[in-house]
Each structure stands twice: as C-alpha cells, then as structure tokens.
Image (cartoon, rainbow, N blue to C red; front, side, top):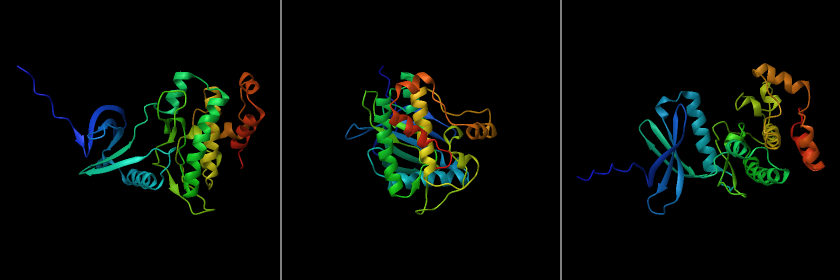
Amino acid sequence: MAHSQAPRRTIGNWEILEVVGSGSFAIVWKARHLTTGTFAAVKEILSDRLNKKLHESLESEIAALQRLRHSNIVGLLDLYKEPGKIFLVLEYCAGGDLAQHLRRRGPLSEASCRYLLRQLAEGLKVLRQHNVIHRDLKPQNLLLSDNGSSPALKIADFGFARSLQPAGLAETLCGSPLYMAPEVLQLHRYDAKADLWSVGTILFELLTGKPPFNGANHLQLIQNIERGDAVLPDHVSRSLSPSCRQLLHQLLRRNP
C-alpha cells in the first residue's frame, strides 16, 4: 500500500525545505517559491519568547532591511506574521558566510580581499547614506551568493543596526568583541567610524586567518588593543602591496 506523502509546509508563497541554521529564538530554513522556484532563506523567529530588548533588536533589523536596498545588502523578500512567530524571507546565499569561506579556503590573497572589500564598501556606503551604523560587522554576518570564484558579498544581520543623525554619536555596547572598535569596547561615544574598525579586523583575518587582537575576556581584549598595533606576520606583510598595508593601518587606527 502506498504511503500518503506528508503535506508540504508553506509560509505564504514559500515551500519550506530543510533547516540551514538555528539559534535560541530562531530557525533558518531553505525555502522555494511555489510559482517561480526561486530559493530563499526563511528566518522563523519565535517572537513570543523574546524579551523587550530582543523585540527592539528584531524591529530594528526589519526596519533596516526595509530601508536598505542594494546588491551588497541581503534583501528582504517577504515578511509574514503568525501568533507568536515572525517570518523574514531573505535572499538565499548559497556560499554561506565569510567565516565558513575562510575555514574552507584558508587565508586569502590580496586580490581576493580587495574583491570582497570593494563590495563591502559599496554596501557600507548605502548604510552611510541612510545614517545607519551596523555595529556588528564580522565574517559571520557577511554572506556570499555562491561558492564560485567571484561571489557577490552581502551584509546581513541588522539586529544591532541603529540610525544616527548626521554627526550624531551612539553609546550602546553591542556587537562581537573581537571585531569591536576600541571606543565601543571602552563605552565611549562613537559614530559610523566604528564600523570601519570592524572592516579592518575583517581584512586582517582574511589575510592571516585570525583576528588582529584577542583576549581571555573583555578587559584583556581592551588592554591588548591599547598596548600596541596589530602586527601582520612577516610572510603576509611581505606579500602585500604598500597600499594594502596602508589601508589596514588606517582602518585599525585607535583614534580615527
């Protein structure tokens, strides 16, 4: 006797396929559009489990994605709500994130880094035009469209993003410590330049395979940043053009 097939789960116009990621309050599914066959990533958020701060973070992410439309920013395709749940339908990036890319391939050449950073700069330019600071730039939040040699890079995860009036300053501690600017770690007021420090730490990691500064805890990380400049291994430094070394130095300036 033939077994009846389980009904397909759908969210709006999207058929849910397999899980591609999960966290404390969300599951990310690969999905396919019922009409066009286009793939997407559906982020299923258990909104009834979120505290006030996480609700604000989610609202911030949705607002940012609705405002920021660019080929180097992950696109919000659809938004659905059910009791206790919110579904964000996002562009599907088959290449995974930049951290996974780095684990697969190891440190990248200067040419590959330039290719990726040029796209990151284009995405950040749009944020700047809208007076938005991302505040959590790191390899895990930079997605790649595919696994090929020339993927599109897309900035993702805008949960910590916030709007600033031109020349305004923020003073909230958020983001990932290894990629945070010193002024953020030290609870000083900061502006969009804080994102540029994060870009510098990402570039350093792409070139060497590890972040420029480390520490067993928050305080030790701050002390290590204050003690000295990020130092490239000799073999990496020798392989780089003067302009690349200068860019890294400018991005990782402690008082820009």
